[in-house]
Length: 225
Image (cartoon, rainbow, N blue to C red; front, side):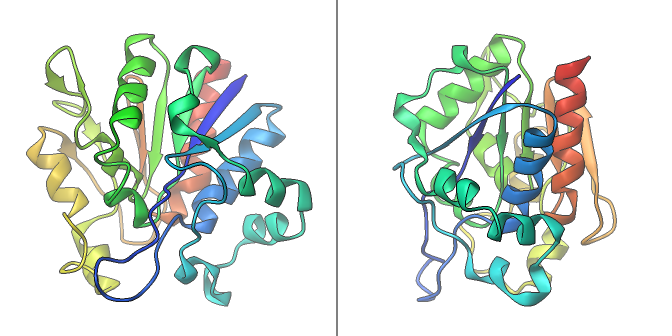
């Protein structure tokens, strides 16, 4: 079982002067779910190397058993510090792809041509693709056979009410919930901040940080089926 994890390389929260990046829990929980299932994990990002960590995901109240495990795992930290360049990745080498969130993907992965073509390749090869929280932003420009991948599919992602709660509705380049709906997706959500994961065909999406472990486990179940 070979799983590719794609992280953002974007670290600026628009022109607020604040930093963003990937969300630690959304990387750590799936990473260990895959590792504990015996998967071989490859990490990649648009620019390669160390992806930027969203500082908001490193505060004491955002920590979980998985983030604690990561911080006590030098091998995993080293793995993350050396992500491969997305341009060098071939979908044929992997059984599935998982995208952790954080606000970063709204800026880079949403428009990254290599990421877009990779997702298309996975789907056309009948391989599952999974995204959590803001990572479904990477689906914004993905089309398969001329139609948006999310068209007529059940899908979730960070909700408008959650974006409002963190005070970034006017900062982000687009609202994820709106973008998924505009591309024809049947957007669903659970309660804010509670785990909610939707599976439709090859597409697995999780709503928020609390959904990261469940989304990863659904991907593992799909691969083991």
